[in-house]
Image (cartoon, rainbow, N blue to C red; front, top):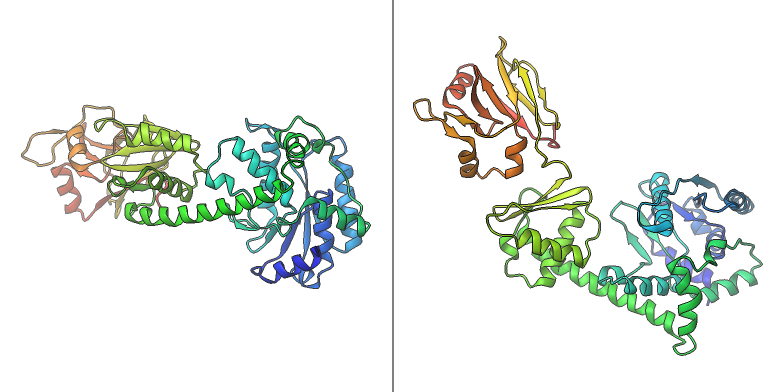
Length: 435
């Protein structure tokens, strides 16, 4: 096993970009950094290191100083990033990982490549840990040697096929100095329990267990790639002109695995974190499978999933909550409403136009035709297929105590004629739409 040769070979196939090595000061990242520092082609990529100080150990500052000293000896610039680890239900391991990736996002440039020292034993632990947590193909595919994350970071793991024992032999033969993280020795964390208790118990009976688990991850990655390809075909059929709206009719004949994969891909592209089987089953049951006259709503983290007239709508959380406001408006400026939506008359009137703008409270009536009866907005909404949550948030425009418009969707006949006589158009821009 020639680690330097393997890294040089892999480096030759990488896209262009500066190399930013995640350097903890432990053995794995020490081997990686020294190997890259020995390659002129790596230094030609403006090789740098980043050390993330989580502040979880009393000696964390000593670790940072050690890393700075190693980099100084190698002539490699290093950035020490101190982070605040806040546990939010994912446990200390997950919180530290989240803080670490946030630091990478803050420091990495657009074309940078984050280089990490995960090895084959790490991969085996990850596969086993995710299997015990009930992961599907996406989770069991575990780590990739090269990946492009949803947040835009490009990640390279050149040691992923190398066993830890090989790294240790290399480190000792090269006389490298590293620090051992005391947190890796405690059995408090699930990963450490697998590393120190479970996998060592398996190896005497199954000596190739690490290699087999790593191979399983590769097969799961292949399965996930196939799943994504099939989901992409189904998604193309269900896509509408609005990315946040998905048509359900094209998915009605899709078998459950394809339907779930399509929903997962759609949500992922819109920024919803990876959706597991339990959540997809909930979407199927409570949103897609709800009664035809129901108005289902499901919270997905910072988003809300709604169904209306055979379509799924993904909204920002809170974007479907009713509003209450009443604002006097003379029509001569753009009116910003509490949710960020805007009303305007184009062009503005020469003389003030006394109007009042309010949220909908129910029971409003509007005379669409000048000689016709006043009609309930509720019935007009149904005819125009206005989603239920938009009915509760979009503005009602009043003139002389009478409702004359709902956003720019429905205008009373007399009000429409009044605007037309002055060459004006009422324009409503929903919250979040481009200005």
